[in-house]
Length: 371
Image (cartoon, rainbow, N blue to C red):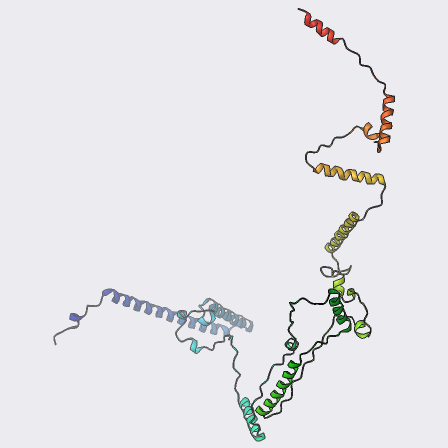
């Protein structure tokens, strides 16, 4: 009974009490400041209202505009609400603030159709009408028609023959040629396969009649049409005629298509014109190399010599020496007879010179004998 609070709990610290007191003081000071500002604003507004009575309409408009500008500036400088700051995290906005807002966001999934009174009424009317007509049949199953794959489905598989044929090559080529010309593509059919097909068709018709309440007509048999790579003249004519393969080719297969876009002379730019000029020069250069030019034999010889000199200059361990003008001016003998004639003429013109023995040997010998 005599127990007190201080015996069980520690006394409160001084720091907490001081902090509380400081906070209370700051709050009271802020409230005083806010009240003072509100009073000042009220006083200014009252003063302005009193002044407006003594001013003209233009001055009143100017004061009104200034007030609007000040309010806009305050809104711009003040901190914006979390709705206007763009992307924001949860801890930066107040709790349960999204529940109070109407948000707009994109969805990737398709939205379900909106069920209205009109849609429900239309469905009910349809059900009532079917009950009146007594149309209680099931919904028919829809099958996809294979228009593209019909030909492939009915196409026969090619059977490869590994045995050697008894026919000669000439006979094989003759048969292929006759098939192309006369369009005879009558292939032998197995009788057993045809009998099986007929029996299967009859059986399926009976089964369809038993299992279904409605009459199901036979499915349409697709007609396979073979298109030959032949001109119309050959197809129309009765008698086959030999035709060249060039008639079957397209114009792009005969002539090479030029690269790039085809342009008129007015559309071409300077770069296009220069490019065309360069191509023309290149073609002419190739033509001049392939086709022999009609020139004099002397010029041809000179060109041959130049080409030989160029080839020799490129080769290694080859030395080219220049001859004298006199020797070069003399015509070389092309045959053996001319060569010997020139040799005889040179011997007749130049006389034989006798060798004079010099006495230098005697002098040298006498010098040796001297003391």
